[in-house]
Image (cartoon, rainbow, N blue to C red; front, side):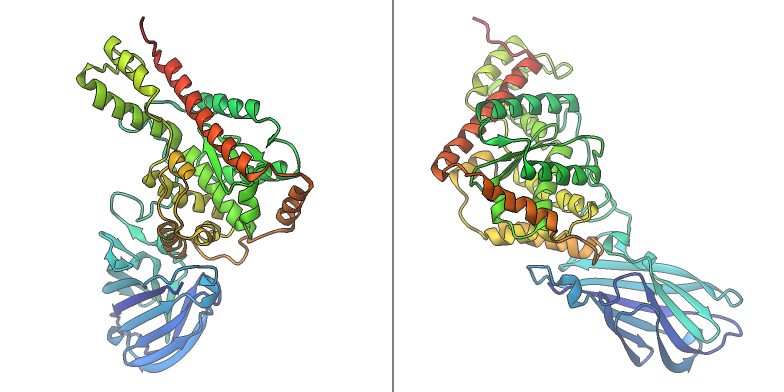
Length: 458
């Protein structure tokens, strides 16, 4: 992925008794080889290699006569882990002088600008807040230290920024999106996980090196999430299925086949971050709420009385009870899946892992036809769509770090221990997977009946 940011800066620095500027210094806080480009000072072109503090000699010019363009690009080291080649991100800024303090060398600027990401212009968004200028004698300093990523830029729209970084999770409650309080998430998840563990106790592991490794890893990710005090409960399923799923309240199940298919620890961190985002975003009970509302609208209409969300009219209870047997309550929407991708990548990154792991996982999948089981469990976006959206987010909003973990000895050792146990045959695994889906669905419906006191009168 090559991502080029274009800063077009027009600066008029007006001063009294100012020296001519003969030196330009560029400061930034990015990795030394993550930034390079060209500065145009009046008609002079200066190429910089990305090192912060780099200085250039220019023909002497007074501050009031200075105009400047700055084009910058992230170097190969930054996007070497990416899959896609994304169009450039363009950042345009203009500065107009309102005042200049020749003693302090500070400039009071009127700022404006715009940002285009993949050709789409962001409304009320600009990065002018990330650049400062200072004149010290004959030296002009261009300070870009505030720029870490597009998340550093000023956003004055409805959300903090385009991808809502920094607003990672929102605890959805209320009639609009979720009828349940989080205690209900915990109760539903506990009952459904108990049903799975009871029926498939020979294949579901809470102990053992891989299970313990998964628990340790997801605990680390959870601590970096929007619910740092919620302890995850992770289970390893010894089946050759490339899958993982999360239940409401913090219960996560990971299949052996998924781990065997992954090349790096960062990929696993991305998948676990995605599953944990389903938990923190409360997608499980949100989906149940959506489907209950759909049943009520289609079959009951105005006859449904919500009253505190826990009392149904007698006629409504009759119809809801019947339709619960026919219509699935679980199943994530495409929007929920994309939301979990976006939030999960942030969780993995903040826990110290490379944020490119999840996109690499989806890239390896390719746009293959979804199996009947995947279609039953949820409606997934195409892998290529997910890769593009994830990498757009990572490159533009998550600061590059050489310290991000791609893989580790602990991961490789835990993966090796799976060879000590024999997996169930694939044909049995497919049957078990379908049975697990049925168990979860029936358990959730049982919880809903209890919650809303749904009983069918004789």
